[in-house]
Image (cartoon, rainbow, N blue to C red; front, side, top):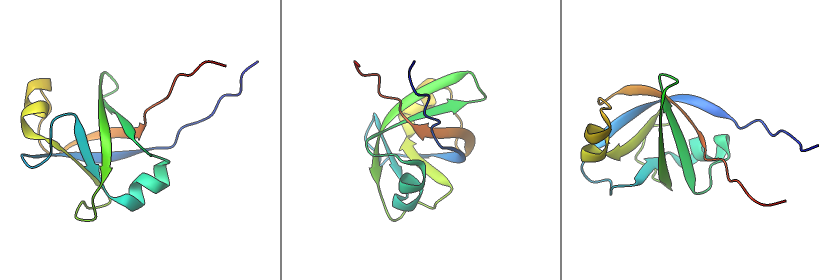
Length: 95
């Protein structure tokens, strides 16, 4: 039987910023380390909508926020300041 690893997650605010490239998300490096995030994140909004972003550390981002591209969030129907569950993206690999 496989070992189930619990991923750490936190509720963070999603902020819209034009300076963030599409497909990317800027996060505070301390928050990334706390959640064990190295390259990609999974964002779950209201337990229904899942979004995936490549995460980049940025010291300007407050610890309780994730900065994403404005147009991308608008397209997905996500408002500025939305609270979402953020965790490291699960990597499915062969055993």
